[in-house]
Structure formats: structure tokens, C-alpha cells
Amino acid sequence: MSAATGTRRQTVWPFAIVCAPTTGYGLAAAPDFLVERRQASVLSSTAGGSLNGSASLVQLIGADGGSFWLLYRMVPLSAREVDQEGEVARSGSRIAPLVEGVVTLERPTGRPTAAYFDAVHELVRGSVRSYFLADNPRRPVDPLPGTTDLPGPAEGGEELPLTELEPRRTKELLHVVDVPLPPGGRSGATGPAPAPDPPGSAARDRAGPDLGGAGADPARRDPGVTRGPGPVAPAGTPGAPGVPGGFGRPALAVIGALSLLVLVLLVLLALK
Image 1 (cartoon, rainbow, N blue to C red):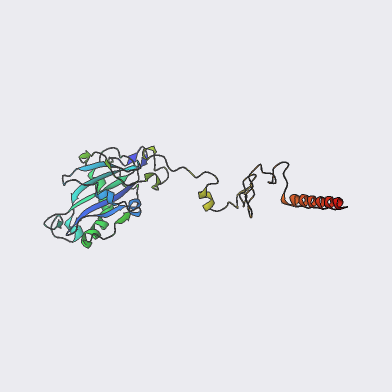
Image 2: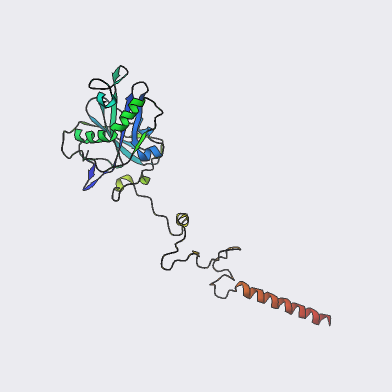
């Protein structure tokens, strides 16, 4: 599976699942965006296999239609990496398996190689060692950032057999369009990026007024709308600023006073 799409390399997030001596399988490392959202468990419930030297590819689809891909392999954990004797680590009376792989937002292309997974292993080996030696299911999962530095799986090296599994579904809302990527790191395969907030939206208001731009209006008044104390006067209301034939508050006060004076004079004349 090539991590490159055309001339652009995919962003990949490493993950690792390991079987500790007494507590069994657990996540040692996972993509940072899944850890932050408390969704990393979808990996341990999706990735699995056997120690047959092959790689697996599966698409995980969320309840919101968002999806990502898991490319992984299962290998024996090396004994020397967790301070044990022999060639492979033991979990109780059996070999300790290690699932190591990557999450991608787009389907990889090409064929996976052993060299590619060796590079993945280097990114997760510290987390795997810490998790195995802690042997504690409450140990926090290590959040790992995305990277584009891994070699493309098709860029030389021994190809591994690949098993493509049926897509899996989860009740989680994956929100993959919100996952941050480097510039140019997203294509239409993962769906459209979030649309920018329209002018005058709440998001812009939270950013504060634009006081420095040319022609900026610190009050951000809409045409025909008054702000400040008192009710808002919509455009077209008599008395609203900028409405032809309308009167402002001072003019209305003068007209009211004159009307009252005329009324008093009429009353006096009537009494005579």
C-alpha cells in the first residue's frame, strides 16, 4: 500500500495493540485525534489477525458516514525489547503478539512491505515497551501525531501478502473532516472540508471586531439598524437613520412640544 497519492504522501497515524503478561490485549499507542476524542477503542475492536506474516487492510465507517482505513500486521513481540529472555516475548504461557499499523484518512494504494512496517515499529516501540512492562489496563494510551515521513510501502523492499477485510461499522461519529492535516494533505476521498463561517456569523463575532482593516466599522452596524440602548429599529421604520422622510429622536421631541403648545392654546381660546 503506497502512502503516496500522486506526488503527495498521505498523512498516517501509527497505532499499536499489545498483549501484556497478565492483563491481556490493550492499546499502547493510537492516533492523537482519536485519543483526544476518547475514540481510540475503535482500533482494538477492529484490528486483529494471526501471526502469519501478512498485512491486513480494513475500512472503518462511522455513524456519520465518515471513515478511515487501518493498515496493520500482527507479529511476535521481540523479547529483548521488553527485557525478557529468548527471541520472542511471552504473555503468560503463550507468545505475546503485537498489532502495529497506521490509520489513514484515504485508502492507501500499492503493496505493503516489511520495510514499511519496520518504520512503523520504530514509532511505536517505546509505547509498546512501556505498556507491556506496566501490565496495567489503566495505563493511558500514548497519543501519536500524524506523519508523512514514512517511506511509501511500494518504494522498494519485500512485499507482504495483503488481506483486505470487509468494511466494519461503528456507532461512533468519526468526524474525519475535522482532523487537522498539513496543507494539501486532504483530497475529496474523505469528503469536503468544513465550510468557512459566513460573514457576520457567530464565529466571526467570537474573534472580536475587525478594528484594523481599511474601511472597518468597529461597531459593525448593519445598514438601517440602530444599536445601543433601546430597541433595534429595522430598516424602513419611520425615525430610523438613513430612511428617507424619517425623523430622528430630537426632531420628534420638538414636534411633540409644539403639538402640546398648540393644544394648550386651543383650550385657552375655548375657555374665553
